[in-house]
Length: 426
Ligand code: LLP
Image (tube, rainbow, N blue to C red; front, side, top):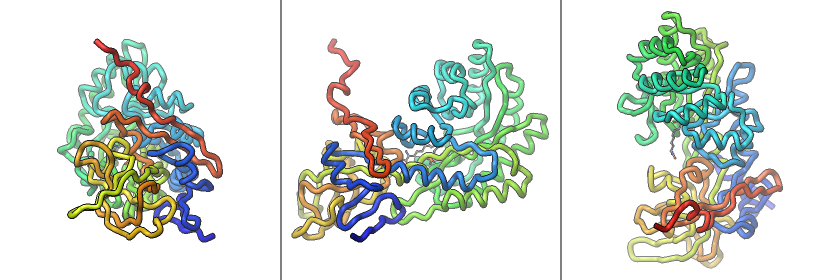
């Protein structure tokens, strides 16, 4: 039987007409667990991770998976077992890391709005570093740590004012963004941090955006960060680690981001050239570790051909796959079991059941389908389930992790009872 790999997705392939994840047929998984269903390939996650590990071979580097991309426990467990740390942005994410067996000492805590109680919990758990995003936050963190008779390890997130050339909602390193400390304020902020009694300065960090497909913004940001490190250290404040954030893009639709190891070969050349090659490195990749490791299976409910548009109504919706509605994002949509025989290939608007015109999954997709067919929405491993909602009181989908020929149900489909838990009639 012929095997045909999908571009950019080596762990999902057609065998004959049937789409497989590793050794398992997706139609069978959909039959067993229902739809919409997220299916993840463990091998795809580990091979994405290995590209970074190859890039860092022989270096002192810590990969902290940015778990906001996909925070399901079964996914976190894969990365925890592989020795990853985690980049978190809330107390809830910390609890998930601990529940999945992650090591608190390898956790870094990012985000512009950490609360006092989140700081307390993270200090008590002994996390590795707080990535602080404002002068006001430094003061509060120092106070909280002092009250607990602890020292909070901190890194300051600098805003290098570099254009990552991506969607405006996912650009974070420009002056107009809410993130980080402005380049010009950085030295003064480090001096303030070094004098606060509850803090120990350990690093510096930056993150310029997401779905970045070019190397140049990374190289520019690195130069700017290293200039700052030189001036901070000249002022007598040692910087132990350099954290260059996440942001590397994936191939959704013929995108051509650099491979993680190639990108890092070039970044390490610059680090070496500037004399920082032996410094401890941290990175916070999210999407590039999980994005192309997941698909969302959905069933065609109804076909509704029309004068202006042909609608293909499927059982997944914007509450499961929010990226098209939020960012006009493109996800490939392919048949799980080959084209439907006897059906003409037509252009379809693939839409969900939610009562919003913004509830679309794909525009103008050429498909040969009929009701009851299964479709796979590709590249759905990142920022889909973790951004899913219960809008229209739709339960969140189930999730399966495929490991070779084994399928693990890592999340049960959410029921109405699950959804109403904690609610009370007046
Ligand atoms: N570190 C920090 C501080 C971040 O804010 C982010 C993502 C990351 C790391 C991981 O970035 P990644 O490697 O995944 O690009 N929901 C949007 C993406 C939002 C990204 C937010 N920050 C989407 O679906 O495209």
